[in-house]
Amino acid sequence: MKKDIEIPETHPRYKSLLYREKIVEGIEKKIVVLQGLIAHGRGECFDYLIGEETIPPAMDAIKAAVAALLLARHPVLSVNGNVAALTPGEIVRLAREVGAKIEVNLFYRRRGREEAIKEELIKHGAEEVLGVGEDADTKIPELGSERRRVSSRGIFIADVVFVPLEDGDRTEALRKMGKTVITVDLNPLSRTARYANITIVDNIVRALPKMIEVAIELKNKSREELEKILDNYDNEEILKKVLRYIIKRLDNLAEAGVTESL
Ligand code: PTJ
Image (cartoon, rainbow, N blue to C red; front, side, top):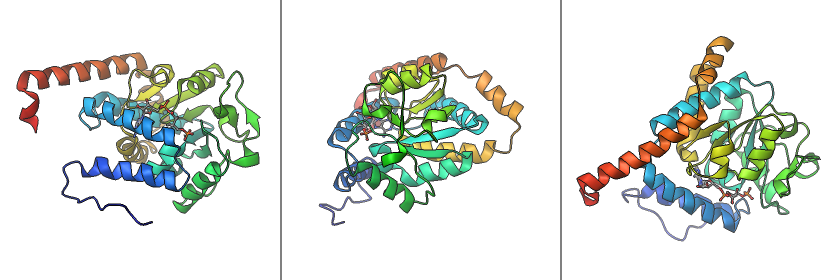
């Protein structure tokens, strides 16, 4: 695809600009919806607050999330447009490491999008992608949005579901179905962040590579060791730590002078 502009690697905000380009390319490929631009911008804003790095409470959540995925009988990774545009290869790799299925699930389900996302995931090595066309053959009860349409071989029977960059309604509905819900969301105050069992407050572009590393490390551990990680995990406590981290960071910046860190 011809690019409008080349972003110089020396640009101080190179990575951030690169991810924006990926989202824009995703729109051109019909993977991302225009609303995805707004969601991405909101994410960028929260990323500034945590300092654009994986903070300690996020790392704890990553370990618990991977332990839950490894312990699951039917783990499923749910993929939407933004996730497919930013981290298609990482989703495929994580699914392989934890033995999970991949399912497309869209808020803005439009003709051609599901197929475009499936194609992108297959291009990045996925062997099977659920939730596309006829495969989204059943519904999550009590959910009004298009996200209710799921695969009876995937999310419907899953015991652990990974739903990055999600909306709160489905998280709540999945929890009501008795499933363990894991999310990645830069906004610690979103409904998804607060409804999920495990909330990774980090950028998906940093969280997924770390989840893959942790999966490689944890997959040889015993079930008892993995269960211990989960038993010691408290999502409410993690969200409090995230908020305290942001408050402290901003307070330190205010003390030291905001321009000092430039
Ligand atoms: O592809 P679709 O049709 O399923 O639609 C996907 C979007 C993301 C447009 C849809 O789910 C949506 O509108 O989501 P929300 O309600 O805007 O929520 C997205 C959440 O993800 C927000 O809380 C953002 O802060 C957060 N977010 C955005 N980008 C990132 C992120 N979190 C982690 N990493 C990101 N890169």
